[in-house]
Length: 488
Image 1: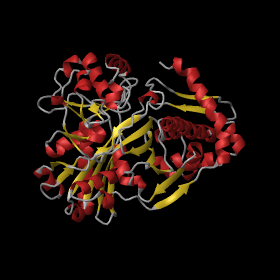
Image 2 (image 1 turned 45 degrees about the vertical axis):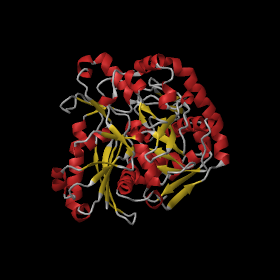
Image 3 (image 1 turned 90 degrees about the vertical axis):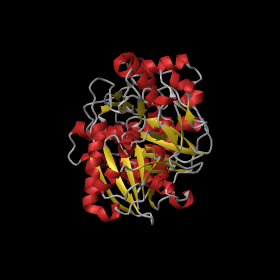
Image 4 (image 1 turned 180 degrees about the vertical axis):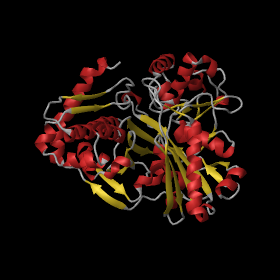
């Protein structure tokens, strides 16, 4: 039995996986995000620990026998967040999250100071990454910055609380902008840009390696065996890839979570920073991946549903959208889905959400369609950026909360012109991947552990639908270009 812990932005999820690949139990505890100023996005690490304690208590109450059989723990988590600790290992301030946009000025300064940074790190300096957040602290919170002794990513702070060890792994560390991604080690040049050294960083392991052991007092409290190993784990997308068996070149997935991600597995470091494509280490040794990222995906649909006061939630809104005729869809407004800024391909933290072309004739269904289409168009822009750098896939696994909608899947398959496949259990995402990484750390083989799931359903591209969408996508792209200078 293996325990996967996935620290998301909106929820911490726990999953128990047995050695027959059966998910024995899952539980989740919700989390909230604080936005004290425009562009800011923060969470208190103490809230993560409280949620983990609640989840473990529930698992022990309902699945105590299975918990007692756990051989290893794996961690997955939201990437890029900055958890800063002082010399006494106390948290200095709320964690600055992946979708925080305050550090755009620091990104420009870092790129000017070190033009070779993308060649080292595989990525442009973007506000989402960890390093610019520390550059912002250095400039705007100098007294706090002077106290920084360690910087940890969110899941790695949980690891510290679980084990007392400062450790990270390659896939998550690749999203800091401090890692030499080709060599899989911290970069002194990148660290120097933020006034830090390797002493401020955790040590590095591969995601499938054992990194530390669970504290005895926690094992006793939660009904786990003493001394069980904690795997290196993975950043949320790399862990999700392991959970889906996306571990070989040419494998890929599309994730419709809070953000939207297209993930392609590579056997070599393949940067394409000019199009704001991410090139990161995978959670497995000698493996890398490319990603395009849009910052608002299923979260844009959730926002629209709440704004419209839709009874029945997102599913009810999608049902209304699906009832629209082709002519009604063609007359719907356009929507730029940049509610939290944007990464691929625009790298614009100041980009904003926009409805264009509204009339008295538009109702909730038209608004809902515009949102689903707009997220799709943003994903298409990212997919085209990946393709421009040589990325390709015959099919993509579809994961995340938005993957539940067959209608949206059909729309996206037609836009991207690629087969989208839902796997049985794909909603488990990073938590399943974390449990699999724990299995690998306990001696399992990649061939045995990282299986692809059974296929639940398939969305094939519709060429006729794609043809009707093409002119609207061209208008969508022109709209962004026309408004870009107005985003401040």
